[in-house]
Image (cartoon, rainbow, N blue to C red; front, side, top):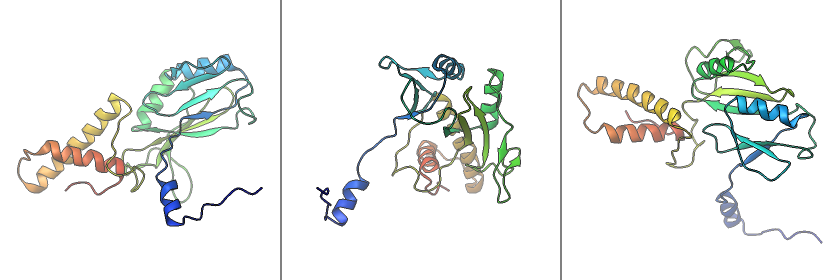
Length: 209
């Protein structure tokens, strides 16, 4: 018997668009669970409690975790590729290298393909670096400080760690300094200005002037 099709039209579309779904876990294929576990713990990822036979780790500041274990995925070992978001890709690169992780050089994307070095204009989404786990699963670190419009719903603003919040506040302070230069006067209402800036940075809305 064929499943019933919702004929609600616009109302059905509204319901599905408002369905609250959060990406929780990405499963990656590995050949040696203990080796993979040691590698990801070396990255500083948190080891979570799980049922027997499942290893789950969560990057610092992330709401999504990775899992691996026997029989969890039919994917070929090393075939996974995923993105990690950082607010400073050069700092993240150096931190991982200092921890003994082999990381590719920082590069940025262009219409002609990858170009060595970070994006000269410091644009979000452009500067990147990659590394692989012992099985060859690829992780691409992407520097994002300002989200494209529509990437964060409404006025929702959140920070995964104190370092993320501190970096955002530093950017807000710099932007607010430029704001005071333009107006030629001290802004005593700076807390509201900072708040508007932080929300606009994450949501992609127009920042305060």
